[in-house]
Image 1 (spheres, rainbow, N blue to C red):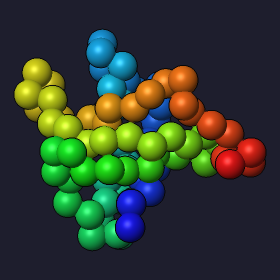
Image 2: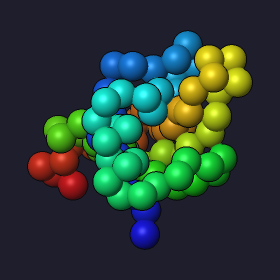
Image 3: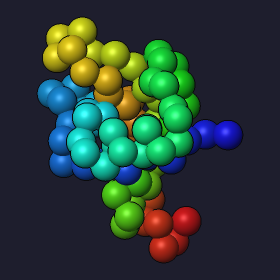
Image 4: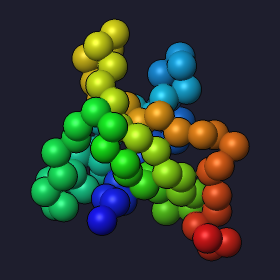
Length: 79
């Protein structure tokens, strides 16, 4: 099952990858018992929007990020 994690879509790195270090993301990881790994498929949501992505580690920033297709972001209501 693909984990669904809260994210802040406004917190993206210069390459457009969403950082996975906001309070809601960390809480979801703990609650769901998810350990991030390179290539792990994840679903990201902020409650209004959602998108499928893939986790990867950013050595530049020393933080986990999600690679997403910004053109595939969809409304939760319409999903």
